[in-house]
Amino acid sequence: MPPLTYFVTGTDTESGKTFCTAALLRAVARRGQISIGFKPVASEAGEGGLNADVLALQAASSVRLNYNQHNIYTFSEATAPHLAAADMGIVIQPQKLSDGLTELKKQGDFVLTEGAGGWLTPLNSETDFSDWVVFERLPVILVVGMKLGCLNHALLTVHAVAQAGLPLAGWIANCLSIYPHRFEDYLAELKQRIPAPFLGAMPYLPDADAEKASAYLSIEPLLDSKK
Image (cartoon, rainbow, N blue to C red; front, side, top):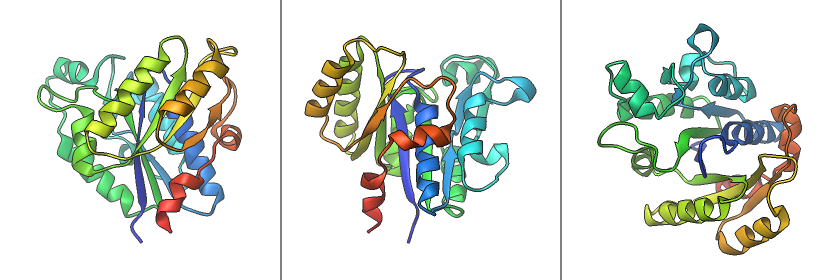
């Protein structure tokens, strides 16, 4: 069977997409499936010109692949990728993202592609990340960074994904602090309003690794589509 492939987006930058994506990869791997993380566009290069988020997905994946197989573009500045690309005199080519995804789908049972920023982050002057996701027809997983203002951000994203004609495969409530603003009330509101499986509430775990974090997530709704 073809591998299951999903796109992970967030309510904003720093919503916890990478941490949740890595945890999902670990959870799937425990089920005996080959899981691979893909962050094709990354901003903020660290030591050696590598991005920390890409390295986290590389470490959480079931197979050992080269950095460049998990990533197509890494930019030095932590800013919108199309701006970082323009500063370097290049244009992000969506076809390169597709080529990279195609290669990963040959090597795993479960591939998670993590976006950059939120749903409508531009890739270039003509294409947003969401346009590429629509082209690839990827079901979407939403990471909601639990904080004041997240209700609006989450529901706008849910609406935009639906308008794009893509299924929302599930969503995660990710705590960005020990005591997020009115967490229980916000969580209840989101559960009522988001018409997609709730994959779990990730507590604030600044020092935990992806393996430990995976225990807080339920992946059954993501694997059911393989039946």
